[in-house]
Image (cartoon, rainbow, N blue to C red):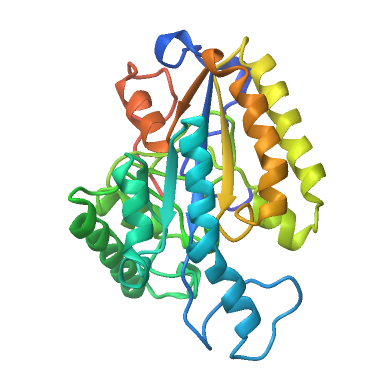
Length: 303
């Protein structure tokens, strides 16, 4: 047999127990906004082309646009249409631009752990380095927000074989690194279960814009098609639609103009939806009876 992870069992979606979201809603929609910070002149980056020599001022400035302009533009969008964000933060931003995070926190948006900085990846760390990274990021959020974060997304969505155990040990109740399903899924760890909340990889705005070079008009039409199909399917089963944003991508004016069409289309169905956060989804799943979402009570066995 092939090597496997032993974190969850195969479960075909049509055979699972049925349930509904709060107030009988069948489709949950969450907006996950990534805000990131980078070391200047070193570490990882993300550019439209191939890797450029350091200091790559063009790439650094493009990413910093998200913190200086794009995040604020997306905040105004959420306030205009009255929907919540999950703000996925590199905690180095607390030292760089704490007022940006505070603007989201003050309106009640969820703060999600997203590492210390996107200039590093957990996969490149030793066990002790990764444990320290998770611990330092968690402590920074607790210090500034007054409460522990519920969820985590690794920088570059890059986990090691120890990540899930370290996250659960640090008190995390959900993560979004495994884009394996349109429903939440329980994963096993050495310290008990952790929930996988759906996160969009295929329609991730950064992947679409940077890697695939998808025109914003087509990307936003794809989001509308995704929403319409999920809304129709949700009559048969509860589903989650994550909408994944990056402040330096969707915060660009021409992309925001197209994305506004997506928001207006979704809001026409507002009464049919649960507009929530990944943390809200996690807390609701935790309230369901055992066995409704498979896997929670099965112990982790790595062999």
